Image 1 (cartoon, rainbow, N blue to C red):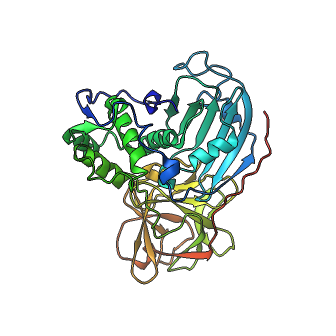
Image 2 (cartoon, rainbow, N blue to C red):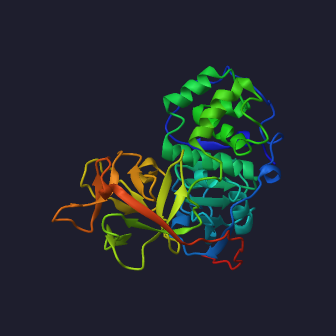
Image 3 (cartoon, rainbow, N blue to C red):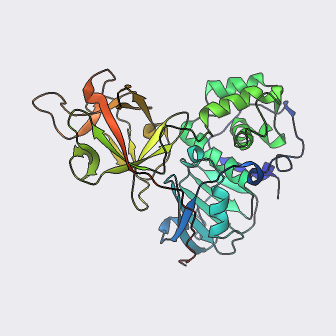
Amino acid sequence: MRSIIFLALVTLAISYDLSNKKTIWNDGLSAHISLTQVTPRTSGYTISPANLSSCAGWDACDPNNANTNYKNEGVPVNSTWYINFDDETWIELCICKGYVMDQNAMAKALSYVPPSVRSSVNRVTQRPTGNGAVTFGNSAIYKGQYLPEVFVHESSHSFDWSNKVSSQAVWLNAIGNDSCVPDPYARTNEAEDFAQTSVFNAADKVLQNGTFQCWSRSRQVASTFMPYNTSREFDSREKVIITSKTSGGRLNYVNTQVVTNSTNSGTWQLVPASNNYYLICESGDKTMSCLDALGQTHSNDQLFIYYPRNGGINQQWSFFPDGKGYYKIVNRANGLALTNRGCATASASTTVVFGADGTNDCLLWKVVRPNPTTSKSSVKQTATAV
């Protein structure tokens, strides 16, 4: 396997200086970790053929050479796919002409990426062997064949893009106070240091925080942002119904609005995101649509379904239990809770809006798990050439 030090993130200019930090391993991470050996359970998945025009885009196969950062590197599209992981993170997969890893190899490698990290990945592309792998926001290109560690690294860049971790003071303070970084590539900047640290955090049982004290602060902060445990309250494989305590209506999406009504539709999946937050995503075939604050910052502002899922803080929600079987659902970006417009008044409506945080029953919701599912592991083999 080629060293992880060839990987890159295309993002805003970064100037944090790590060049004088000691390194734990001078030969990169590749020789020191194997996620295939230490991961107790990977995510199940299915692969299905698709017809994705996005695979011809500048951040995919790019046959028209529209990407100005990588001139004349575009190649024709070979086939396009959807990968559906059992935590309901649908990912678009673009296979380009001359590929090295097929759809099955790509999906298997991505199954080692923790769901909370993969929730920020929308599209992956497999190109012929070239100069490493590169991430553009929520989309990654893999030029050639790589092991799961590289997929965790690149997915961590997407996670960082959505959550702005590497630019936060808590991360900068951590790496500033640590006297070392894992390898020479982590010296590049704070974003690459974060991605390299994330690879080992995915195998935390192998390398505990206290093993290397010179690197412990960074690993502790990375673990806070990127939880790898599987003991969360809600299982993202379950299709849940969310109902209002005051009206009993089900949370639904009807005619571009989020509402509560009594229909039998309206199932959701709670996908793990940063920290202990969840994404509230429509449960359905290849939707990738999630509830989003979309810049709404005031009480009575309406929330939206947003496509595609991006795992950003506008799409992250806390579920606060009241101890009696209900939850207050609060958006991370604006600190406001879900409620019905005019709840507990004569003008109450079914429209779901944001409300000021408080103790009112109008802010409470029940999460009902009608049909728990089991992990998916079958893989469909039919290709769709485009």
